[in-house]
Image (cartoon, rainbow, N blue to C red; front, side):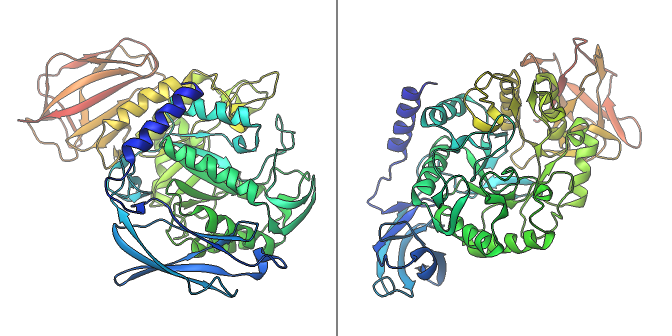
Length: 521
């Protein structure tokens, strides 16, 4: 999809989503209050600004922010329809005590609200629609030249991904040693910054890109801090008070956008300028400042964070070996009873580093193993290029063969039970997930069997239940129905098989899965 087609598509979406009544905002949209205020001194530090939004007995206090040039804003994402009112609060004369009323309409088409945790290990939109993350990694894509960023959006518009892991700050790293077009703070590049004065233009650009992702139906998994500065700018070594103030500013500006997730850090343990206690404090800074309780995680390098912290909504995990086998990945669900997102399982590519040279087949295999485990996997791609534009960091275009196969998996997931997939028998049958007695996915991985004996874990099965079977070639992206029906009959204490001993003929190739669905009267 080229840029013109994307623009036309988004324009049409906006037209379709336009409210039918004369409301000021739609549910889960963004209502903004803008006021003029003082410019003396340092308004980022010296002026406090917030507003309380009320409907009936419900009140939500929302932090505001200074947007430069004497402009103060507060953004509110209303959780319900109807009439709302607000009153501002400030220590500055002329900013506090401002009141207003506005109406909120039903959400427009495509607006399902923010993503939330559902059914313990899974996600759903606020309106109950299922959300099954199929993520990708594009760390520094918003720190690139305009043309490259637009190309990235064009690529995402045609890709299967509905979540992007992305950084606020730029990276100084292999294939990334370039200064960005803009910076988050006022000062002189590369490393003379006033951490108490933000650059509103930087943040306007970032929020523009976040909104554009939202228009594409993509969640922005926003990495707030990272260790990839390597002494270039000093953003990984800000004093604690500067870190906390920066986090509050980001939350005030961005939390109203319903497609924002917070990731406190990428590879938190690689940032040697911060202690574990610092991360504990900063998680609190973000969650205390966020009036909406957006999804919040923290990503590891070698050392896992304690994802049982109740302020963390999901476990964001780097572990390539866990995604090699569903039984390994599923163990995380026992340790952390919340959604498990395997955000880094290594990347498809050809760089001379072990984390960035998976084959496309292996990348797809890891997606399937993670899915069978009842977890969610994130993609990444690192193919060498003369211009050093690698998707994993800068975006641009996808070059690998895995995205098309991941799109096939996404189609399978979209047709699977709304509440999510879980291992049926994690003690024995770690290649079978689904919903007992209703729906199963059986993944056969790298093996090349020529047949599969119909055999399912006993859970909730009864004699006489009938099923249809489809053979899924996960690499060639084909679905082949198997003739006839299979009738379950208990064969042992733990397993049901087909009552007549039928088997499923297979093509003798790797990367085959079976989809088994109940046939009801």
